[in-house]
Every structure is written in structure tokens, then in C-alpha cells.
Image (cartoon, rainbow, N blue to C red; front, side):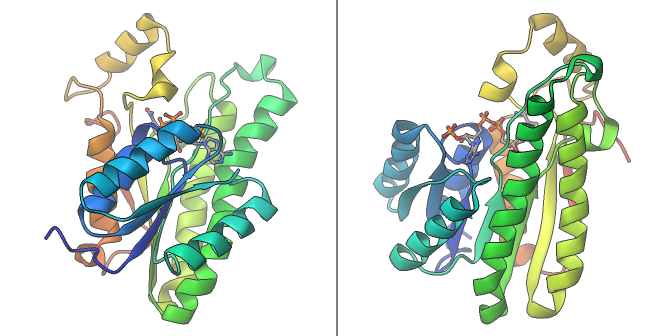
Length: 250
Ligand code: NAP
């Protein structure tokens, strides 16, 4: 099973840290050549690529703000030149700018929508170009449990993450006839830089809501992404895998 993704090229956005890092490592471990995207953490991105190469895999780093059209275009051209066309796109990069709605500044709204939604739009639109030619592709979008439940203080982020689900379903419908599968993963509370800054009382409140009584690890999310990237999930499109320790049951 370790060469399940052999011959495939995967782009993971925001792969320098957290969940994206774990996804990049897991895809490489299963044989994919990985394009490690980052926006500012160059040394962390380099570390991910070096770790993959040390383990016998193939990886390169690519700097691009996923919300900036010209940078996305340049990144895809560079990946195609050095690794080949992208077969697997993981739209992982995301940011939060939390505030209660009454106090939320317009730029807190704009930046979260820009990175989480526009970034996913730009990368998906560019990636399907090559995938349509190959009549094959896997797109995996990282949403969040709060896109389903809402969360006080995350008006912008929950809107973006619910939006990602709409994008997943629409892209699944538009590209199914071309052999492109589009699915989403909705993590609960995962231990990364994004959640590290939350006050202890907020973390305790979250923990009380998780039936499995533990926070998620980036690797838990990466395992689901490997499944969605692999032929094991070929009959699945437009769906969401919920990985949250049971805190949201449908
Ligand atoms: P993180 O630790 O804060 O890492 C964010 C990553 O996104 C970094 O690699 C960062 O790159 C990259 N990034 C940010 N803005 C970017 C941009 N404009 N262009 C390109 N890359 C950009 O976040 P995380 O916790 O791993 O979250 C990863 C994804 O999972 C996000 O979509 C997040 O919303 C989602 N999620 C997380 C949780 C959780 O509990 N952690 C739960 C549900 C969903 P640099 O290092 O270069 O800044």
C-alpha cells in the first residue's frame, strides 16, 4: 500500500506547518511527489521537503499566496516544470481572525474570506485545467466542524468553511464526467499553531464537547486525506469526512 500514490504529483497548500505539513508527509510516504506550498515560513517548508527527501520521497517547495492570482499561476507553472502536472490538490491553507460579529472589522472578514475561499477557488480553477486533460484528478478541501455548527467569534471563518462545502459539491458535479473527484475533510479541534493561542478555558470547553475526550492530531486528518487522494475512494465525490472525536454527529 505504500506506493498507492506512486507516479502522482500532489500540491498541498499551506504545507509548511500543522495539518498541511502532516498531509504532505503522509502523501509522500504513500509515493506521491509533493509540492510543498507556503506563504512566509520558508525554513519550515524546506524542513518538510528535506524530511520527505530523507525518507526517499520527492518534494519541492513553492512560495505563493494562494489568494493572489498571479502567484497561484506562477506556482502551478513552476510545479508543472519541475514535478509535472498536479494530480492531487489539497486545499489546506487557511487562516482565522476571530472576533465577535459586533466587533468584527471589515478587514478581518475580508482576509479570512480571501485566503480560505478565494484561495480555494484560484487553486481549484488552475488545477482542473491539467486534470481535465488527463481525465483524472483528486481534489481535497479542508473545511472545519464550525462550518457545520457555527462558532461564536468565528462569523467570518464559519462562513468560509461552510462555503468550502458548497464549493466541494459544485466542483464534484462539474468535473465528475472528467474523472475528477472532489471531497472535503472537516476536522474538529486539532493541535496546531492555529489552536495553540486559544486560552486554556476555551480549550477545556472544547474538550468537554468531545466524546472521545482527546484533541485531534494533524496525522488523524492526514490519514483521511490519503484515503481521499487514493484509488480506495474512487467511487466517492462531493462528500465530507468528519474527523472530530464525535463532537458533531450527523
Ligand atoms: P496553521 O498551523 O496555522 O498553518 C496554516 C498554514 O497555511 C501554514 O502553512 C501557512 O503558511 C499557510 N498559509 C496561510 N495563509 C496562506 C496563504 N495566503 N497562502 C499560502 N499559504 C498560507 O493551520 P492548521 O491548524 O494546520 O490548519 C490547516 C487547515 O485546517 C486550515 O484550512 C484550517 O482552517 C483547517 N482546520 C484547522 C483546525 C484546527 O483545529 N487546527 C480545525 C479545523 C480546520 P506559512 O507557514 O508560510 O504562514
